[in-house]
Image 1: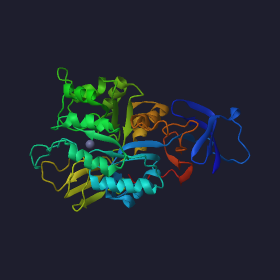
Image 2 (image 1 turned 135 degrees about the horizontal axis):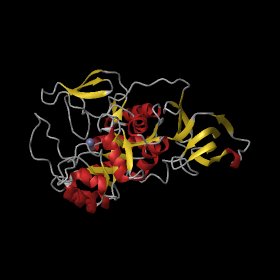
Image 3 (image 1 turned 90 degrees about the vertical axis):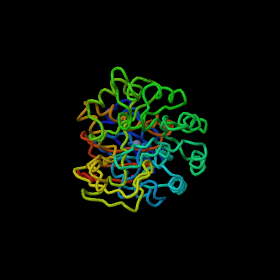
Image 4 (image 1 turned 90 degrees about the horizontal axis):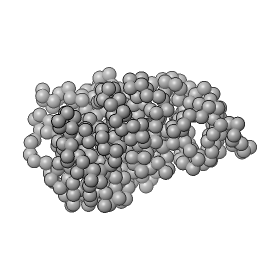
Length: 404
Ligand SMILES: [Zn+2]
Protein backbone atom coordinates (compact mmCIF):
# COMPACT_ATOMS: atom_id res chain seq x y z
CA UNK A 1 0.00 0.00 0.00
CA UNK A 2 1.15 3.54 -0.79
CA UNK A 3 -0.40 6.06 1.54
CA UNK A 4 0.17 9.74 2.30
CA UNK A 5 -1.15 10.87 5.68
CA UNK A 6 -1.59 14.60 6.07
CA UNK A 7 -1.88 16.19 9.51
CA UNK A 8 -1.71 19.62 11.09
CA UNK A 9 0.68 18.23 13.71
CA UNK A 10 3.16 15.37 13.61
CA UNK A 11 5.36 14.31 16.53
CA UNK A 12 8.48 12.48 15.38
CA UNK A 13 9.17 12.52 18.55
CA UNK A 14 12.46 14.45 18.41
CA UNK A 15 10.64 17.26 16.66
CA UNK A 16 7.15 18.47 15.87
CA UNK A 17 6.18 19.27 12.31
CA UNK A 18 3.24 21.54 11.49
CA UNK A 19 1.16 20.86 8.36
CA UNK A 20 3.05 17.63 7.86
CA UNK A 21 2.77 14.69 5.54
CA UNK A 22 4.16 11.21 5.96
CA UNK A 23 4.50 8.91 2.96
CA UNK A 24 4.20 5.20 3.58
CA UNK A 25 5.38 2.73 1.00
CA UNK A 26 4.71 -0.88 1.99
CA UNK A 27 5.92 -1.40 5.52
CA UNK A 28 8.37 1.51 5.54
CA UNK A 29 8.30 5.27 5.83
CA UNK A 30 9.27 6.83 2.51
CA UNK A 31 9.32 10.49 3.56
CA UNK A 32 8.28 12.80 6.41
CA UNK A 33 8.16 16.58 6.38
CA UNK A 34 6.15 19.70 5.75
CA UNK A 35 3.49 19.38 3.09
CA UNK A 36 4.99 22.29 1.20
CA UNK A 37 8.30 20.43 0.89
CA UNK A 38 7.13 16.94 0.00
CA UNK A 39 5.82 15.90 -3.38
CA UNK A 40 3.09 13.25 -3.18
CA UNK A 41 3.32 10.95 -6.22
CA UNK A 42 0.06 10.22 -8.00
CA UNK A 43 -0.10 6.58 -7.03
CA UNK A 44 -0.34 7.46 -3.31
CA UNK A 45 -3.74 7.36 -1.63
CA UNK A 46 -4.21 10.48 0.51
CA UNK A 47 -5.65 10.44 4.00
CA UNK A 48 -6.08 13.77 5.75
CA UNK A 49 -6.48 13.47 9.53
CA UNK A 50 -6.80 17.23 10.02
CA UNK A 51 -6.34 18.36 13.62
CA UNK A 52 -5.54 14.89 14.82
CA UNK A 53 -1.93 14.21 15.70
CA UNK A 54 0.27 11.63 13.99
CA UNK A 55 2.74 10.16 16.49
CA UNK A 56 5.05 7.14 16.63
CA UNK A 57 3.50 3.87 17.73
CA UNK A 58 4.31 3.02 21.34
CA UNK A 59 7.11 0.56 22.07
CA UNK A 60 6.59 -1.60 25.16
CA UNK A 61 9.70 -3.59 26.01
CA UNK A 62 8.43 -4.98 29.33
CA UNK A 63 5.06 -6.69 29.10
CA UNK A 64 4.03 -10.14 30.36
CA UNK A 65 0.66 -10.27 28.64
CA UNK A 66 -2.82 -8.76 28.39
CA UNK A 67 -6.38 -9.46 27.31
CA UNK A 68 -6.63 -12.64 29.40
CA UNK A 69 -3.40 -14.21 28.10
CA UNK A 70 0.16 -14.50 29.34
CA UNK A 71 3.03 -14.13 26.89
CA UNK A 72 4.35 -17.47 28.12
CA UNK A 73 1.24 -19.42 27.11
CA UNK A 74 2.21 -20.17 23.52
CA UNK A 75 2.01 -18.61 20.08
CA UNK A 76 -1.81 -18.35 19.94
CA UNK A 77 -1.94 -16.62 23.33
CA UNK A 78 0.79 -14.27 22.23
CA UNK A 79 -1.24 -13.35 19.16
CA UNK A 80 -4.22 -12.48 21.39
CA UNK A 81 -1.99 -10.07 23.31
CA UNK A 82 -0.85 -8.51 20.02
CA UNK A 83 -4.44 -7.94 18.89
CA UNK A 84 -5.30 -6.07 22.07
CA UNK A 85 -2.10 -4.05 22.13
CA UNK A 86 -2.73 -2.73 18.63
CA UNK A 87 -6.09 -1.43 19.84
CA UNK A 88 -4.34 0.51 22.60
CA UNK A 89 -1.71 2.21 20.43
CA UNK A 90 1.22 -0.09 21.17
CA UNK A 91 2.80 -1.10 17.86
CA UNK A 92 5.80 -3.07 19.14
CA UNK A 93 6.30 -5.13 22.27
CA UNK A 94 8.93 -7.39 23.69
CA UNK A 95 7.16 -10.57 24.85
CA UNK A 96 8.32 -10.93 28.45
CA UNK A 97 8.69 -14.55 29.50
CA UNK A 98 10.64 -16.23 32.30
CA UNK A 99 10.83 -19.95 31.49
CA UNK A 100 12.22 -22.07 28.62
CA UNK A 101 8.88 -23.61 27.63
CA UNK A 102 7.30 -20.17 27.41
CA UNK A 103 10.27 -18.90 25.41
CA UNK A 104 9.78 -21.68 22.86
CA UNK A 105 6.17 -20.53 22.36
CA UNK A 106 7.40 -16.98 21.88
CA UNK A 107 9.89 -18.11 19.25
CA UNK A 108 7.10 -19.92 17.40
CA UNK A 109 4.98 -16.75 17.40
CA UNK A 110 7.88 -14.67 16.06
CA UNK A 111 8.55 -17.20 13.29
CA UNK A 112 4.86 -17.26 12.34
CA UNK A 113 4.61 -13.48 12.41
CA UNK A 114 2.05 -11.61 14.47
CA UNK A 115 -0.88 -9.38 13.52
CA UNK A 116 -1.83 -6.18 15.31
CA UNK A 117 1.51 -5.55 17.01
CA UNK A 118 5.09 -6.29 16.02
CA UNK A 119 7.17 -8.61 18.22
CA UNK A 120 10.87 -8.02 17.56
CA UNK A 121 12.05 -10.41 20.26
CA UNK A 122 11.72 -11.85 23.72
CA UNK A 123 12.66 -10.42 27.07
CA UNK A 124 13.40 -12.74 29.97
CA UNK A 125 12.47 -11.18 33.29
CA UNK A 126 13.13 -14.48 34.99
CA UNK A 127 14.43 -16.91 35.95
CA UNK A 128 17.40 -14.95 37.38
CA UNK A 129 15.44 -12.92 39.92
CA UNK A 130 16.08 -12.69 43.63
CA UNK A 131 12.90 -13.93 45.38
CA UNK A 132 10.64 -11.31 46.88
CA UNK A 133 10.04 -13.55 49.94
CA UNK A 134 6.48 -12.44 50.38
CA UNK A 135 5.00 -13.32 53.77
CA UNK A 136 4.01 -16.98 53.87
CA UNK A 137 6.33 -17.92 51.00
CA UNK A 138 9.26 -20.27 51.42
CA UNK A 139 12.36 -18.52 52.69
CA UNK A 140 14.73 -21.07 51.19
CA UNK A 141 17.93 -19.51 49.85
CA UNK A 142 17.63 -18.29 46.25
CA UNK A 143 18.59 -20.67 43.47
CA UNK A 144 21.95 -19.80 41.91
CA UNK A 145 22.14 -18.02 38.57
CA UNK A 146 24.07 -20.80 36.85
CA UNK A 147 25.36 -21.49 33.37
CA UNK A 148 23.13 -24.54 32.84
CA UNK A 149 19.93 -22.55 33.41
CA UNK A 150 21.22 -19.72 31.23
CA UNK A 151 22.04 -22.09 28.37
CA UNK A 152 18.62 -23.70 28.63
CA UNK A 153 16.98 -20.29 28.20
CA UNK A 154 19.44 -19.19 25.53
CA UNK A 155 18.95 -22.32 23.42
CA UNK A 156 15.17 -22.15 23.77
CA UNK A 157 15.38 -18.57 22.44
CA UNK A 158 17.09 -19.51 19.14
CA UNK A 159 18.61 -16.04 18.97
CA UNK A 160 15.35 -14.19 19.68
CA UNK A 161 16.08 -13.27 23.31
CA UNK A 162 17.03 -9.58 23.19
CA UNK A 163 16.98 -8.59 26.87
CA UNK A 164 17.57 -10.65 29.99
CA UNK A 165 17.12 -9.47 33.57
CA UNK A 166 19.35 -10.60 36.41
CA UNK A 167 19.62 -9.81 40.12
CA UNK A 168 23.33 -9.36 40.88
CA UNK A 169 22.83 -10.50 44.49
CA UNK A 170 21.95 -14.03 43.40
CA UNK A 171 24.81 -16.52 43.77
CA UNK A 172 26.54 -16.30 40.39
CA UNK A 173 24.60 -13.14 39.53
CA UNK A 174 27.50 -10.99 38.34
CA UNK A 175 28.93 -13.88 36.30
CA UNK A 176 25.52 -14.35 34.70
CA UNK A 177 25.33 -10.66 33.76
CA UNK A 178 28.67 -11.06 31.96
CA UNK A 179 27.41 -14.24 30.30
CA UNK A 180 24.26 -12.46 29.11
CA UNK A 181 26.39 -9.72 27.52
CA UNK A 182 28.86 -12.22 26.06
CA UNK A 183 25.96 -13.87 24.24
CA UNK A 184 24.91 -10.58 22.64
CA UNK A 185 21.91 -10.00 24.89
CA UNK A 186 21.15 -6.72 26.68
CA UNK A 187 21.46 -7.14 30.47
CA UNK A 188 18.97 -5.51 32.84
CA UNK A 189 19.31 -5.00 36.60
CA UNK A 190 16.20 -6.32 38.35
CA UNK A 191 14.77 -7.32 41.72
CA UNK A 192 16.60 -7.89 44.96
CA UNK A 193 18.50 -6.31 47.76
CA UNK A 194 21.61 -5.06 45.97
CA UNK A 195 22.85 -1.74 47.31
CA UNK A 196 24.59 1.03 45.42
CA UNK A 197 28.00 -0.68 45.27
CA UNK A 198 26.62 -3.92 43.88
CA UNK A 199 24.47 -1.99 41.42
CA UNK A 200 27.61 -0.30 40.09
CA UNK A 201 29.46 -3.65 39.93
CA UNK A 202 26.57 -4.97 37.85
CA UNK A 203 27.01 -1.99 35.51
CA UNK A 204 30.70 -2.84 35.19
CA UNK A 205 29.67 -6.38 34.22
CA UNK A 206 27.45 -5.00 31.45
CA UNK A 207 24.06 -3.92 32.80
CA UNK A 208 22.53 -1.11 30.71
CA UNK A 209 18.90 -1.12 31.92
CA UNK A 210 17.39 -0.46 35.33
CA UNK A 211 14.22 -2.58 35.39
CA UNK A 212 11.02 -0.90 36.67
CA UNK A 213 13.10 1.70 38.52
CA UNK A 214 12.09 2.23 42.17
CA UNK A 215 10.05 -1.00 42.29
CA UNK A 216 11.59 -4.11 43.89
CA UNK A 217 14.97 -2.43 44.46
CA UNK A 218 16.69 -0.79 47.42
CA UNK A 219 15.65 2.82 47.89
CA UNK A 220 17.77 5.92 48.30
CA UNK A 221 18.90 7.03 51.73
CA UNK A 222 21.33 9.93 52.01
CA UNK A 223 24.07 7.71 53.46
CA UNK A 224 23.06 4.51 51.64
CA UNK A 225 22.12 5.54 48.10
CA UNK A 226 20.88 2.07 47.23
CA UNK A 227 20.18 0.71 43.76
CA UNK A 228 17.85 3.67 43.19
CA UNK A 229 20.80 6.03 43.77
CA UNK A 230 22.77 4.09 41.16
CA UNK A 231 19.92 4.13 38.65
CA UNK A 232 19.41 7.88 39.13
CA UNK A 233 23.04 8.88 38.72
CA UNK A 234 24.75 6.37 36.42
CA UNK A 235 24.55 7.65 32.83
CA UNK A 236 25.45 4.25 31.38
CA UNK A 237 22.08 2.95 32.47
CA UNK A 238 18.68 3.69 30.94
CA UNK A 239 15.91 3.73 33.52
CA UNK A 240 12.55 2.17 32.81
CA UNK A 241 9.51 3.21 34.74
CA UNK A 242 6.07 1.71 35.23
CA UNK A 243 4.07 4.86 34.58
CA UNK A 244 0.60 3.50 35.33
CA UNK A 245 0.13 6.04 38.12
CA UNK A 246 -0.07 3.26 40.71
CA UNK A 247 3.44 1.82 40.97
CA UNK A 248 5.41 5.07 41.23
CA UNK A 249 4.39 8.49 42.57
CA UNK A 250 4.49 11.29 39.96
CA UNK A 251 7.11 13.16 42.02
CA UNK A 252 9.41 10.13 41.90
CA UNK A 253 8.91 10.03 38.12
CA UNK A 254 9.77 13.72 37.97
CA UNK A 255 12.95 13.15 40.02
CA UNK A 256 13.93 10.36 37.66
CA UNK A 257 13.52 12.57 34.57
CA UNK A 258 15.41 15.44 36.20
CA UNK A 259 18.32 13.13 37.08
CA UNK A 260 18.48 11.10 33.90
CA UNK A 261 17.42 13.61 31.29
CA UNK A 262 14.77 13.13 28.63
CA UNK A 263 16.87 10.67 26.65
CA UNK A 264 17.61 8.11 29.39
CA UNK A 265 14.11 7.34 30.76
CA UNK A 266 11.49 5.17 29.10
CA UNK A 267 8.00 3.96 29.90
CA UNK A 268 6.90 0.35 30.27
CA UNK A 269 3.50 -1.15 30.93
CA UNK A 270 4.64 -4.28 32.86
CA UNK A 271 1.13 -5.63 32.32
CA UNK A 272 0.05 -9.22 32.59
CA UNK A 273 -3.06 -11.08 31.48
CA UNK A 274 -5.45 -9.05 33.64
CA UNK A 275 -4.95 -5.90 31.53
CA UNK A 276 -7.93 -5.49 29.23
CA UNK A 277 -10.32 -7.53 31.41
CA UNK A 278 -13.14 -5.92 33.39
CA UNK A 279 -13.03 -5.38 37.14
CA UNK A 280 -13.72 -8.54 39.11
CA UNK A 281 -12.14 -11.55 40.82
CA UNK A 282 -9.86 -13.81 38.81
CA UNK A 283 -8.87 -17.27 39.94
CA UNK A 284 -5.82 -18.35 38.03
CA UNK A 285 -4.96 -21.28 40.29
CA UNK A 286 -4.11 -23.52 37.36
CA UNK A 287 -1.92 -21.03 35.53
CA UNK A 288 1.53 -19.68 36.16
CA UNK A 289 0.66 -16.08 36.69
CA UNK A 290 4.01 -14.79 35.66
CA UNK A 291 7.27 -16.41 34.74
CA UNK A 292 9.11 -13.91 36.87
CA UNK A 293 7.65 -15.16 40.13
CA UNK A 294 6.89 -18.70 39.09
CA UNK A 295 3.66 -18.25 40.96
CA UNK A 296 0.86 -20.75 40.80
CA UNK A 297 -2.36 -20.73 42.78
CA UNK A 298 -2.82 -16.99 42.54
CA UNK A 299 -6.10 -15.16 42.81
CA UNK A 300 -6.46 -11.53 41.89
CA UNK A 301 -9.05 -8.84 42.42
CA UNK A 302 -9.18 -6.05 39.86
CA UNK A 303 -10.80 -2.89 41.08
CA UNK A 304 -10.69 0.55 39.46
CA UNK A 305 -7.82 -0.47 37.23
CA UNK A 306 -5.67 -1.87 40.06
CA UNK A 307 -4.95 -5.60 40.44
CA UNK A 308 -4.39 -6.86 43.97
CA UNK A 309 -3.50 -10.28 45.34
CA UNK A 310 -6.32 -12.21 47.00
CA UNK A 311 -6.74 -15.44 48.88
CA UNK A 312 -3.04 -15.78 49.68
CA UNK A 313 -3.20 -15.03 53.39
CA UNK A 314 -3.91 -11.91 55.41
CA UNK A 315 -0.33 -10.65 55.26
CA UNK A 316 -0.15 -10.30 51.50
CA UNK A 317 -3.75 -9.97 50.38
CA UNK A 318 -4.27 -6.51 48.97
CA UNK A 319 -0.67 -6.16 47.72
CA UNK A 320 -0.51 -4.63 44.25
CA UNK A 321 0.21 -7.14 41.52
CA UNK A 322 1.49 -6.15 38.09
CA UNK A 323 0.02 -3.28 36.14
CA UNK A 324 -3.30 -3.18 34.24
CA UNK A 325 -2.67 -0.25 31.91
CA UNK A 326 -1.23 -0.10 28.41
CA UNK A 327 1.60 2.26 27.57
CA UNK A 328 -0.82 4.90 26.27
CA UNK A 329 -1.89 5.52 29.87
CA UNK A 330 1.75 6.10 30.82
CA UNK A 331 2.04 8.77 28.14
CA UNK A 332 -1.13 10.44 29.47
CA UNK A 333 0.18 10.28 33.04
CA UNK A 334 3.50 11.84 32.05
CA UNK A 335 1.63 14.78 30.55
CA UNK A 336 -1.13 15.15 33.15
CA UNK A 337 0.63 14.19 36.40
CA UNK A 338 4.31 14.94 35.79
CA UNK A 339 3.90 17.92 33.46
CA UNK A 340 6.12 16.90 30.55
CA UNK A 341 5.15 17.91 27.01
CA UNK A 342 3.32 15.50 24.73
CA UNK A 343 6.39 15.39 22.50
CA UNK A 344 8.66 14.39 25.37
CA UNK A 345 6.15 11.89 26.72
CA UNK A 346 6.19 10.25 23.29
CA UNK A 347 9.95 10.25 23.31
CA UNK A 348 9.80 8.19 26.51
CA UNK A 349 7.14 5.91 25.07
CA UNK A 350 8.58 5.26 21.62
CA UNK A 351 12.14 6.25 20.78
CA UNK A 352 13.78 5.76 24.18
CA UNK A 353 12.58 2.16 24.69
CA UNK A 354 13.68 1.42 21.13
CA UNK A 355 17.14 2.77 22.00
CA UNK A 356 17.27 0.71 25.22
CA UNK A 357 16.40 -2.45 23.28
CA UNK A 358 18.78 -1.61 20.42
CA UNK A 359 15.87 -1.41 17.98
CA UNK A 360 16.10 2.29 17.11
CA UNK A 361 17.69 1.66 13.71
CA UNK A 362 14.41 -0.02 12.80
CA UNK A 363 11.60 1.68 14.73
CA UNK A 364 10.71 4.12 17.53
CA UNK A 365 10.47 7.35 15.52
CA UNK A 366 8.85 8.65 12.36
CA UNK A 367 11.79 9.10 10.03
CA UNK A 368 12.51 7.95 6.51
CA UNK A 369 13.47 4.28 6.24
CA UNK A 370 12.03 3.06 9.54
CA UNK A 371 9.01 0.80 9.95
CA UNK A 372 5.68 2.55 9.39
CA UNK A 373 4.49 2.05 12.98
CA UNK A 374 2.34 5.02 13.94
CA UNK A 375 -0.80 6.15 15.68
CA UNK A 376 -3.34 8.92 15.20
CA UNK A 377 -4.49 10.60 18.41
CA UNK A 378 -5.95 13.81 19.78
CA UNK A 379 -4.41 16.19 22.31
CA UNK A 380 -5.61 13.97 25.18
CA UNK A 381 -4.07 10.85 23.59
CA UNK A 382 -7.41 9.36 22.64
CA UNK A 383 -6.60 6.84 19.94
CA UNK A 384 -8.19 6.87 16.49
CA UNK A 385 -5.87 4.76 14.40
CA UNK A 386 -2.99 2.33 14.75
CA UNK A 387 -0.70 1.38 11.89
CA UNK A 388 1.80 -1.46 12.24
CA UNK A 389 4.32 -2.04 9.46
CA UNK A 390 2.25 0.03 7.03
CA UNK A 391 -1.02 -1.82 7.80
CA UNK A 392 -3.93 -0.14 9.55
CA UNK A 393 -4.79 -2.55 12.37
CA UNK A 394 -7.22 -0.36 14.32
CA UNK A 395 -9.41 2.54 13.28
CA UNK A 396 -12.29 4.27 15.05
CA UNK A 397 -13.98 7.65 15.18
CA UNK A 398 -15.23 7.19 18.70
CA UNK A 399 -13.54 8.51 21.77
CA UNK A 400 -14.33 5.33 23.64
CA UNK A 401 -12.01 3.98 26.28
CA UNK A 402 -11.23 0.31 26.19
CA UNK A 403 -11.49 -1.61 29.41
CA UNK A 404 -8.04 -1.57 30.97
ZN1 LIG B 1 9.66 -7.34 37.83
